[in-house]
Structure formats: structure tokens, C-alpha cells
Image (cartoon, rainbow, N blue to C red; front, side, top):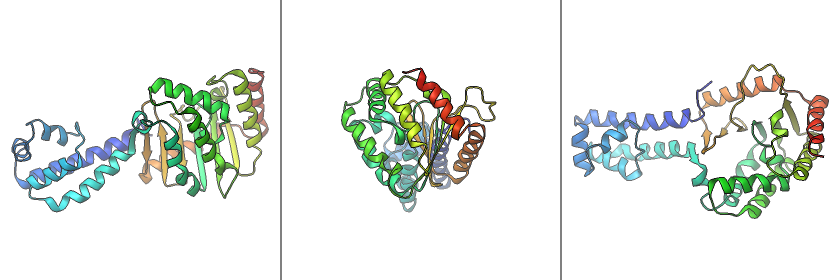
Length: 282
């Protein structure tokens, strides 16, 4: 498995840098000459070529123009934008609060027919109660120092979660048992959340597995990730969301999900895990 969920984004950025440097070499000019032609500080071309600095659209245009390769600029700009969209900092995503990001992802949720979600930290968003989501989003807002629109964001999250009850969607959810005990809200809200899990797991379109504390691990605990059909995997880190679209890496996450499913308990045993946790909050 990749050492980091950032690997896809980093590799994509590195590929853009490598291609730009190849264009420079094909033009027969040095990095210093390129910087002079572009009107840049002499170290900028080197930083871009080593993937230390992400080039803007204008940087790519200037680079190609300096190398008499302007016809390549459009494709490189498109590839660069794709690479940047893979790695989205939470501060960037939440710069206007959290409501809008929930609203923007509604189309993705509506067109996805099969969700596969692994949660190692909190209950997955689509099966959160309003009180649980309020506690969680409040702590995220305070930690990130982003605009406070918690009430509106919670409502947007609940609206997006209607896919669990409407349309033709299937959900395979895996939770580490620790998630059932992490207090992201008060005891009453935690109890309400666990009762809702017991309710929602009875739906025919929902499969809920719990990975027990005592499970013999064949896959170590990972960052939380959401797979939307086989088109995209969103991995959540402390600082960013990484969107993976490379088929090979998506397959690796599917392999991990299958292994995690194998060590999880389902049905009556999963209910027993949730009921045991519920006793801690009642």
C-alpha cells in the first residue's frame, strides 16, 4: 500500500514538473536562461522543475512560450489543475464555512450507487445524527479557525444524507470499534448516535461492520476514506482531503477495504458492539 494518501497528488505534481523540464531541455536552454526569458528570479525555474513550487497557469504559459512550445501549454495547464484538485486543504475547502462544501458534493452523492466507507475516527457523515454532527462540526470549526456556519452546515449534511433513505444507493460501512467511544459530543448525543446506527443498519441497502478492538489485523488502521463507486476515493487527513482517481490506487483501497471487511463483525455481533458502547453513555 502507498506510504501516504498524498502519493497520488505528489506524483501528479512531480509529473508536471518533469514534463516542463523536458520541454526546457528540448529547447536547448538552461534553467537560468529560461528564468531570464520569463522575467523570473533565477531560482524560480529550478523550484518549478523540482516540484518545489506549483506553477500557476501563467507560469506554464510563460515557460512554454520561452521554450517555443506554446502549443503544449493548454494540455499542461489542464493536467496541472487536475493535480491540484487531488489535494484540497481543509482551510481552503472551508474558507467560507462548511455548508457550501456539503451542498457542492450533493451531485456526487446522488450519482453514486455504491458507497464504501472506512471510518477510523468518527461516524461517517451520511449516517450522523444532527446532534452528533453539531458536536463534530463545532470542534472542526474551532480547530481550523474557519467561519462559523455550523447550524447551516449540519442541515446541509443531513440534506445530503437523504441518499441513505432515497434512491438506488448501497452502503458498505466499516467502523473501527474505537469510533463508537470517541466523545465528539455530549453523552446524550453519543447515545442518540449509537441508537441511530442500530436503526440504520437494519436497512436492506446498508451493511455495517465493526472492526473489534481485539481483531487480528491484516490491515493496520488507516486514514478514513470514502469510495464513490469505482470512480473516486476521498481520503481524509488532518490537513486536507486527497481525491484519488488513478485506477491502480483505487484498486489498492478496494483491496484494503476487502481485508478490513474480513476482520470486521457484522449482523448480531456488530449490534452487540454498538449496544455495549451505548451502555457507556446511558
